[in-house]
Amino acid sequence: MQTPFEIDERWILAQRGAKNPVSAQRAYHTLVEDERTASGTVEPVATLFLTNSECPFRCLMCDLWQNTLTGPTPAGAIPAQIAAALRELPPAQHIKLYNSGNFFDRKAIPPQDLPAIAELVRPFKTVIVENHPLLTDERCLEFAGLLKGQLEVAIGLETVHPQVFPLLNKRCTLADFRRAVAFLVNNGVRVRTFILLPPPFLELNDGVLWAQRSIDFAFDCGVDCCAIIPTRTGNGALDALQKAGAFTRPDVRALEQVTEYGIRRGHGRVFADLWDLEGFSTCSACFPARAARLLRMNLQQSIPEPVACDFCDPANHR
Image (cartoon, rainbow, N blue to C red):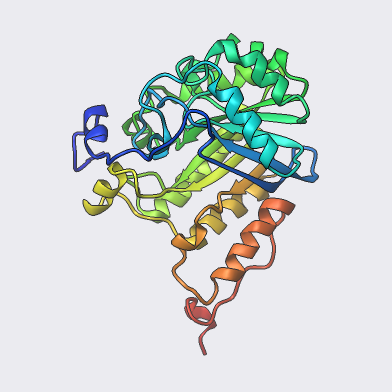
């Protein structure tokens, strides 16, 4: 596959701007939102975006480095962040400890803090963390053993396109992803994954097709839940690729199409990432209805009637 740049870690880092100011004592963002659970109920989930050291893998599409520390996370900082967030957030039954990288990277989450973290999240039915395939090993099981609730690990698949995947600088293979999922599932740990729509280097129509193939691959590996992420600019690298014509922003209709496909598969939950969704709208007239439709799909895991729009759908014009 032809690329407009020699893409490696040095190039990715050269495209970056400055990091945002953050504190090791505070999660940089928190929220509570409803999510459909594996059992089929809709329950509140607290998401803590923890502040810690930067992920060492530096993937092409990642923008999470913008809210990370410049060095290793100090011992005790992560339990302090979690405790402070839980004091301020409304009640929830599940928790996501998202840390801009890998939960089992010792520079990000000091191992000595894991017992304190497990005690803080003891009330939650499910504890969801992020991790890279190459860091998925016995450390995950040791943490699972400390928890009262169910551990779930979120692993970025991104795409199964054979030429695009190596260009993302994930420094792993699809075989590594399959191995990591099998290791976790065989040891009683649930897995969810993130899929890009579209990844760079693909036109949107091809991006839809490969997102669907990525859903198929993920469920075949044993993944329980797929989150479809509209790929965003703003990290420097994707902005450069967009300017060079090597990245196409998605639209809401494409997100609807891929989410519908995954739900129809019936192999597990499929969620559309709705963060900043309006930025992917091409029609202000029908956007509210499309956003509501996607939220309904997320919560009900069913396919509502499609949205008809007289402004952006030529078939509706008379």
